[in-house]
Image 1 (cartoon, helix red, strand yellow):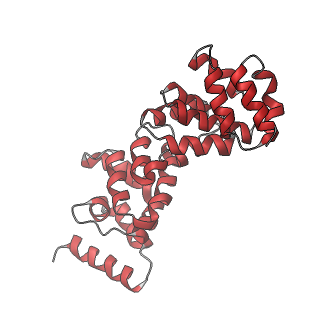
Image 2: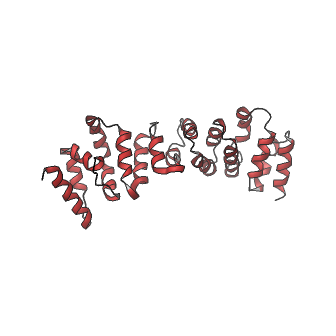
Image 3: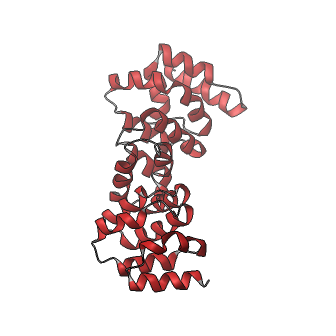
Length: 240
């Protein structure tokens, strides 16, 4: 039995009986990174939630070495996430914290979050100048659900504009309604004409019909005054 196999069996046994493996992994990171990388993402990785959580504090050291093995950061993290089980979201959060400006985060977000891809990443960068840019990138990948959720939670126009710009008008109007409910002064109506054209009466009317909170009406009344259909929908909203 070679040394790598011995180390693998020691780790597996400690995982089986519930003993910590942190010190072993730290020693491998410092002295035998190839063995650690093989254990983490090799042809037969140990995998599982516990080993992923133990690897997270070592990611900086691992990243410094994976280039020597002709592995990109994305490839490493995709492979690790594949075998992370219940720790995949926690792993993604750590990756985002380390690489929040990298476009390849979109791929790993899709892998881990599925239809909600982008939610964790965009939540993390919501106060950055490039928030809108990444909203557009996720919209282009078809990640509508996370953008709708963020429009609602943040009361921000960027997810809405990303959806509308990408041609997802119906979903964009849903996001716009939710953004207005969260923040009636978010400015979404003012931006709609720039994207959809000057005649937005029909779209405004459709959006207003999606609003559930009648209290929003007083905040947007002046903005829809010149649109007959939208004005009628607003009156209906007030009567709810």
